[in-house]
Image (cartoon, rainbow, N blue to C red):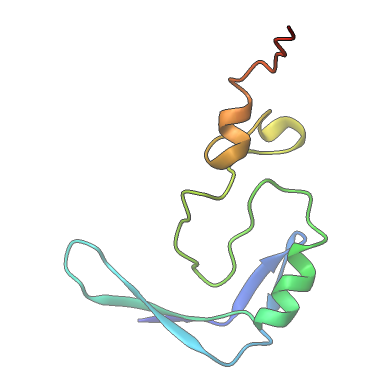
Length: 97
């Protein structure tokens, strides 16, 4: 079984600053196939706030359907899900009497 202790950040693999480990399971068998050292959450939040991306996942956070989904630059235009996804299909109007 492989133990992964590095994170890919800014084009290079760097050692993790975290100490907590998470098992990675093979979905078809439930067998543990790797262990990953999780990122230090405080450091990861600081880094995430500097990234220009539509969504950043820290330490295998589960999906939140209320969170917007979409990219920046060439990875996507617009947003899906949540309030931001609905607003793309709305046309504001005013009816005055």
